[in-house]
Structures are given as structure tokens and as C-alpha cells.
Length: 150
Image 1 (tube, rainbow, N blue to C red):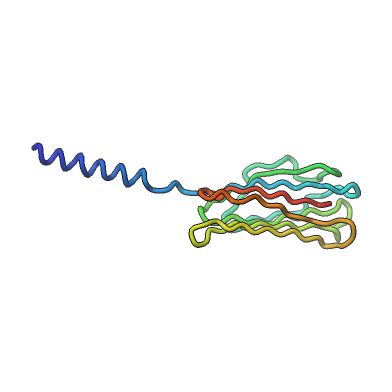
Image 2 (cartoon, rainbow, N blue to C red):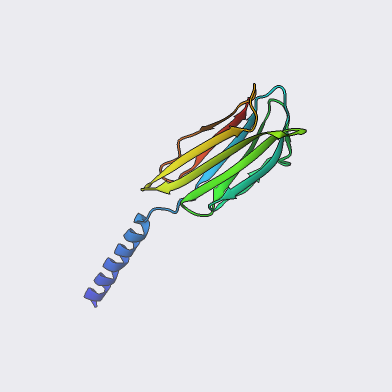
């Protein structure tokens, strides 16, 4: 009787140690902020796309127009542990040929998260689009990106 209960306690303790040693599932969260630094244009939010399992969990309501020299912000979360990507399009209000396209991709590769961002303007001149990302959290993959139109 004593031997059976000792063996049961040993295996029970081993199971607890194994379960607590497993890493928690990482579901990255991105804080996205768009800054309209232009004194010339108001920005109309045109479209967004999330792929690779990303989805918007909260945003400023409504995501319609960003007045001159203000910001827009929202949060995107991943439904998977390995990827989060999306694209945003902001157009100068009333001028659909002038837009900034912002992209971000977080991927899990070789045991670490890799974040890439891109910002492109569809016109040239005084207005430019930039993307400034943070370094992704090593364990969970959380990051933030600030996209700016100046």
C-alpha cells in the first residue's frame, strides 16, 4: 500500500512540474497609431486589411477622418501564436489620388519574432509617410508602430 501511494505521488508531482514548465501561448498584440502631422491635409481613413490571423480588437470610433495634426489609434491582436500582419490606407480628404499606405508584419521565425514595417506615399512633394516600430517583446511578440504623414 505504501509503495503504490508513493509512486502515485511521484508521478503526480512529475505531471505538475511538466505542465507548469510549458511556455504560455503567445498571442501578439500590436498598438497601431497613425499621426497626421500635415498642416495641409485632413486624412480620410480608406481601408484596412488584417491577414495571417490578425484582427482589430478596439479602435477610435468612428475611423473616418483624422483632422490636421491629430492622431488615430487602435489595437490589433493575433488569433495565432505566430503571425500578425495588416495594411492601412489613409487618403488626403477629398483627394483620393493622394494616399499613404502603411504595412506591418510580425512573424515567428527561428525561435524569435521578426517585425517589418513599410510606409509609402502615392504622391511626391512636401508630404511623406514614415513608419517607426518598437522592438517586439521577445516572449509574447507584442509591439507598437507609429505611422506618420508629414
